[in-house]
Image 1 (tube, helix red, strand yellow):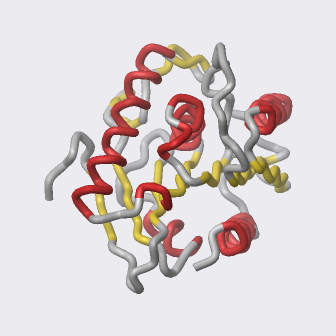
Image 2: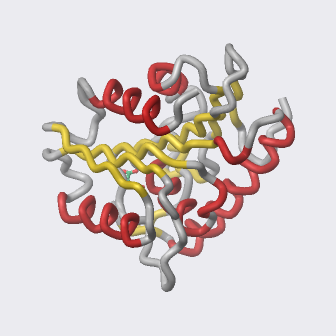
Length: 208
Ligand code: MLT
């Protein structure tokens, strides 16, 4: 398989659905990690799943960090541009509809999805963000005009404090996005009921 700049897996839609889920794993994950999650979120969508290109003690990530929750912004922006290019190249290679690409990110993957929403707002139709943080504060708000974004947060998350989640939701709302913030009684790990909630949200916002 051509790697298009990122090692990745691509699973076509079983039913010619126009929707593609861009699956972005967490620290230490890989391109296979979120395929089941993607299928649970949508039985019909095509799945495009890249592996983060940065290694932290052997663990793949989508960008470098200086410490837990402290991001290397230069690397983050460079990797975000590369990921946006990958989505464009993959759309041409696999015949995907670029205006129907919805990101599904977990943790580090949710953070680069947030960065893509800020730096390349046209590259995503929407996003499901499991346990995201504020990737960085932009000088100028992007135009996310009614873009559907689901933020799934855990009230017992030791990695992402509650006010961080609230700051991100507020930033996305101020940029014009159609934000749904859902709290689960959960840690940083995805908990029961959240995938089902994501599936319902996706079917409502992106009906086939
Ligand atoms: C990050 O580095 O993106 C966040 O701290 C989440 C993580 O990967 O632990």
